[in-house]
Image 1: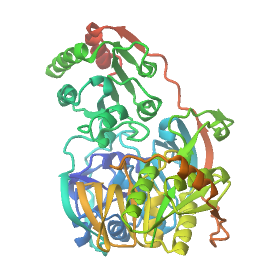
Image 2: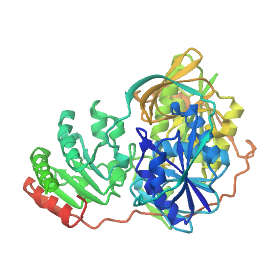
Image 3: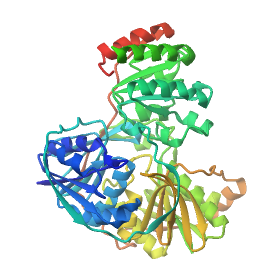
Image 4: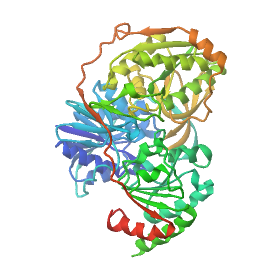
Length: 309
Length: 252
């Protein structure tokens, strides 16, 4: 059985999540082809262990992101029976369009899957877990950071296909470049602030700590709604992003049900809050009852010590 | 010309979820609402209407209880209401996509707005899937739409950052969190909405035969409870928590 993985890039390089998707293809025991839209990340994809072929799809339509045009071009290069991608906004859109083109089912944001295609995925932003079974040709998108990445001792053949399609949109103006900062949905460690941070400028403390441990900075809905400076792209929770990092540090977040839904499946949760009754402590592995003003400078010092060790 | 807005009724994000047998107990849901991202799509449609682009057709696909969200949409200004009635839960998005695109083709809608994903399934397949079936342009992750002559300009948060995207009709837009404050209905709006008729369509009205899908439902379960954590008093505990993160949890 052939499995086609739609690769994703960040700033022209292969997104590391692609190596995680290769691990999923191995669970299904398939022969793995990685399709690189626009030719981005081709060399890196060829090095992932277990990849037998890399297809670079190139064409004028890849100049700007147009979901329909990209999907048509990508679809022409896909030969697999099962299609996999990450469940990023990009992956979800491309896969939904291709699934409809091929008239095959799609299941999004998978967190577990077995060799016989028993699938687990969170629904209601993590308030429930759904189990499904699927057979035959299908499109599946996979949650980042759930599966370990495949190694990088591969040496796959690279094939280039030229295929462009009609573009339906044009970019009138680029307003802001994509954030070079790590996105919360892909980070292994997240440090999030809530309204308890008092002022959006105080998020600088979170950024300082994030740099020490390579974390992404997130926020609660209350913080995003209160302060213009905190963009919605940082929001963790039911109307923001659902995340599953190794470590989630919640600072000044009381823990509204919608926020808990978005982060409760994190492997380890640390909560820092001055209110001992805050609901966030109910899901925390390690709770620290303290104001952030007292705790964060110490946290920074301790983490610096660890990193220097 | 009409602007179509696709709305889904979901358990309100504040409602507690309970389980009965091997599935979420939907009868125990105390409050049902329009899915949050769909609300931003509706708000944007109301703005486009106020700028003279056309009237609004609100469309939902779901069981009989979901007609309430159409009345809610009418209360803030939706002009006509279409309910595609399917009583059973559908686990294969293709069925929903086929029903909605058949209705949209019949209504000859050139501009289609919907949320980027529903707050219950969290999938995000429906909008792009409909655009694919209708073979029209799809602009996703939009926060705002403006009229520019015959075209539309959307603010999009795409893979390359925030961009202003020009698109010509027909086009489908999926909404991220919008920039507009959501309006609330006034009493007059609510009274008028109650009198508004809802066109109900069945899959056979739309000549759509529901698939016997290869997606089989197994169960829905409560997420595993975490064992109670350790709680420490005061900032002095930070050092020992960091130690535990390294030694017990092994995460840094």
